[in-house]
Image: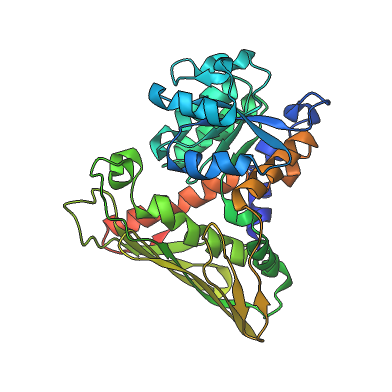
Length: 363
């Protein structure tokens, strides 16, 4: 049975990165750090990515793109960003002439990932995109095509695949220290009080909802734990606050994998949940919390433990992706756009099943 990496290669998806010539990741040899421009200055950029960039070895915050001019002075004062490296969404394309910026990191509402990833790629900048990659398979394919055409790297911000504890269990998909996997339970969510009813995460048309925001964590976990692609899904989407949530508040989904492996998953904006359990022929392992910004740790059936990573997850993610560019080793990209596309293919099936009252949908 093909594992997911083999599937990606055979399907021709990974070629968007792996088959490109070394010149694809052309960065002047003298550069030891990549200049990163954050596109969107909301919570994740402000509180997590910008501080993490101060901890990286191979990146530096060089630019910002924002539609909120009132935010610019504080960012410039705090991070020393030049006037010439400050852009609006309307003139972002002009960074094509700016050699100080090598990468655009797309940190926008999900439905805006495609247009601004394309602008970045067409400006000759490598594209790092927050999860989920996009809201449809078609959008993902367009992003991959744009980056391939412009010979730039495209990666998705799945920081967990860079986190050491998680990387260990990813390796177990191949080494199988506890025998063949039988069942998986994965859940991720938090209580969203919906203080701002206009926030994009509450609205389906903006790419909001628990499945896109938090559900990709358990979904992606089932795929990296097994190293396989799901064959079918059944899903439901109960909503206890329909007056607030115009997108899914909770999504329950079951995945059928090759070799009889079954996964039961939950994501929600109604409760705090954060666990990954894997039961195997000869034991089990539990990661809890499994997708927090810090403190990810595990306990194994033989009594041993997986200790938390002491570094910064976002900094490690960005350094890993930067090194693949600087060293001109595209095959070392841990989460290429093709990986994000495979998740969204499953997400589309999850929504299709939920719209049919939980009917089984073949992927």
